[in-house]
Length: 209
Image (cartoon, rainbow, N blue to C red; front, side):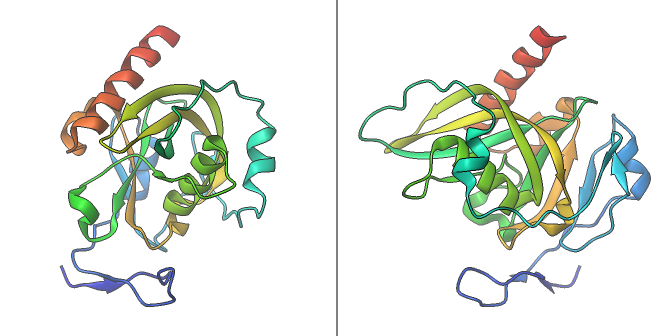
């Protein structure tokens, strides 16, 4: 498959060339709970998924204010640790949103949206911001899911549900966005910590049901 240029430039305004682009799914896969659905940057999407409209969302300038609207309790964060935050966004049909980092950044085939916490942002605000930037989705955080320790820090992941947005609007760091059945996560995720997050999700999902 030939290379392509991402519709969004990187943070320095430079074009981003995708060396091995993904293939988009047929639109009917978005309505099939047992199928993996994939969209590429600027690619086609159905008008709605699980009854919720798919429409571009411009994002916000005050992510802290948006996060505060949820009033979600948060465990204490470890002192003196570099921190990151992300979201595990689950659809009513049980499928989960994943991103494929552009050109397999850092060896990832697929992962959950996550990023380092910018100065002045809370963990929850960071999770909302990074999820939007990497997936194009507006999400609402619903619960703390798991903290994953790292060598020099930790990453906190929240459960979330989609409230709007269009995954075709993904930023330059993603070359595809997937909606994946939970049964497929073990074959899609290729990092141990992501598989641990998937296990935590499965346990929480089974408890909820």
